Image (cartoon, rainbow, N blue to C red):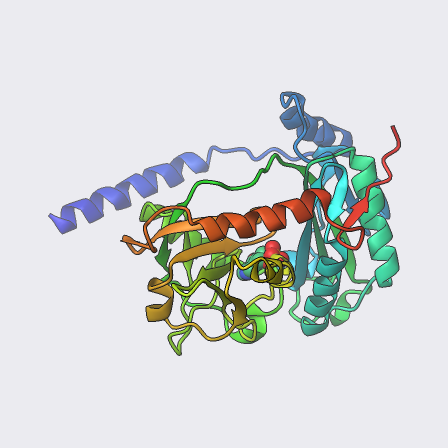
Length: 349
Ligand SMILES: Cc1ncc(COP(=O)(O)O)c(C=O)c1O
């Protein structure tokens, strides 16, 4: 039976190969012909999802999605030598841009990527890009790369590091429904790579895919010592049976900007007597699974209640009151927080 299947597969493959010899691959002889083809894809799209892009290779902002591309010899493309970060655009304000900018600079330093511009220029480019995009609600994503040059490993042949950024229209709102999660079987990144936000997200992708295949929303990584680490693109937090907010230490995982802000804001709930305390510490799987409430914490959520983990309910298996109280704190900070957290975008109408 096995042999039969094998030979069928082989004969199919060879007949397909035979057909391929008739295939004539089109050669684009002019850039205008190619541009026309690229525009075809977008001509059918009513509302462009990416209203603006900046590229240091172009030296400016472009509004045409057909040419929002980066060079194939950029080391971020073929070697993963790039770091990235994000910021949320909400009601015409950029939320926590400075904290995210500080993090991309730390990531770039760890990845040994030098800056194409000083921090103040990067910041100004991002604000001007958001203004040019006219986007009032969405995501700003940006990358620092070793830059284009060649196809080798070492970036020594890349004359200039590159900076790219794009604005993505997005409609997000406070999460009020709980989700199911699983423990990931995909290996975690070692600390050096987990603590810098670099473009190698294959483990994260596979981890999410594994969760989806098992009917869950996303996954939880547990480190080799048996402590809770993080989710594939989010941090994780718990409310203990004693009503304490607990987050895993950030030594070996990404230090989330939302988690950082949550830890700054949560003491307000302690003062009001709603929470008993706020702590960061190593959290074992046993402690975590025995928590009263559990949540994901990340920029676009900002908080997502978790009600089931590996088919076991967390607490009562429903969205927790304290989770929602923390979610309200973060959401209010996003829509009406202080000037230190929100930069008004100087749109030109
Ligand atoms: C691996 C990982 N952990 C945690 C986070 C959460 O970080 P933040 O709150 O800055 O979005 C992210 C997202 O950036 C991430 O990719």
